[in-house]
Length: 309
Image 1 (cartoon, helix red, strand yellow):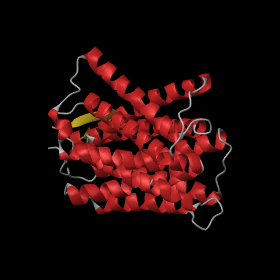
Image 2 (cartoon, rainbow, N blue to C red):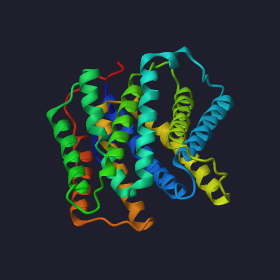
Image 3 (cartoon, rainbow, N blue to C red):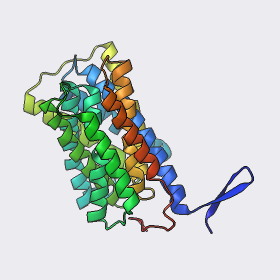
Image 4 (cartoon, one colour):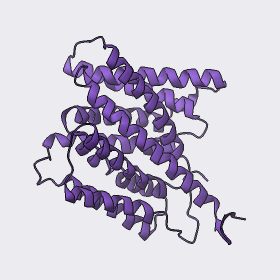
């Protein structure tokens, strides 16, 4: 029987899949909030340290954090599951996403990069439909497309704030979408600690790739930079845990649109802390994105097949 939630004198039946969708959506919002702050950390520190070095330090710090937590909780972090196809694809996608998106953060406004990143849900939902044969209702398709239309309004290629360097953020977005799909397809035997260590080592690898490509010098961080880097590791660990958990709960088509919440956090940080600005059309786009997130949770009246039965 479905679970029930009492509201005043009324009892509302809530199915298991609806409960999982709500939980997954909440975790996705938590992940997006922490990632938005982490983005601002990378942007701030990139003024004194090479981006490749920042990624390397964040990746090593996050991997050590997950490894330490696994030892304390006595969880396995080494498994044959990391040598599967989805995990190999996850590494490649993570490297592509981090290299290009972090470069975009350093070279373009935070708000602009965050806006472009919001196309990720559309790519993920389409990938889930094609690769995993997940059934997606017309209502959810409409909600996702509405959010994507909101992103296009915000980006506004004709505006002065748009830069062709934004293509870096587009490539990063595609990489992150591939990572999320690979996380969904990863063996269920892999726990969050294994995925965390694996993912953050991929981030460290991204830093090495960037350093080698740009031939950047190694700079010892000052005390303020170390504080920012420690904050980045802390936020990245929380965000990564929430993201992995969200992508393995409920339906991809119901949960991924809540990635749009990142634009709210990112734009707010850009305006209030980095001195960036937002236009009226951008505000309209944000409204459409938020609206799409609420529409997608509208009860469908029937359960849809999950990727993991």
